[in-house]
Length: 143
View 1 (cartoon, rainbow, N blue to C red):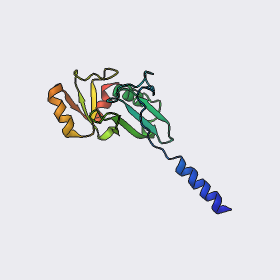
View 2: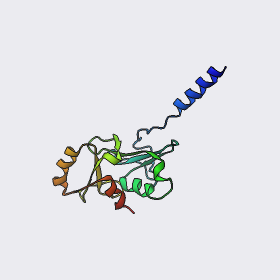
View 3: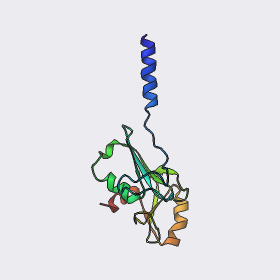
View 4: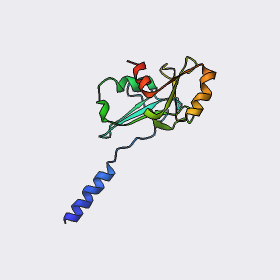
């Protein structure tokens, strides 16, 4: 009997694994601004250690919520942004390469695009006359 209870408990833990989920463009709404997330080149997602999921249509919505204190920053297990060069693909926000330019037409006018590959970001940089930002610099852009 103890084995059965242990197995059920273990299955319960495995079934409750915290993980991100894909953004459903055209269906999901931004947690911060409440607009429908439409552009698959922009957006992001925060997932807490308890599994609470927040989706965003632009990096400025994500950062404004992140900095708001609504959830302790330490509680975010996943901080993800959409890779501009691979639309719809979520990448780790802390390791992404960001480009800020008035040539970038993001949904909420952050003028920031995220890239998983630094070399790809560098190709867009001269075309857009952009400036490179790290995750820490992005966090200070929208306070």
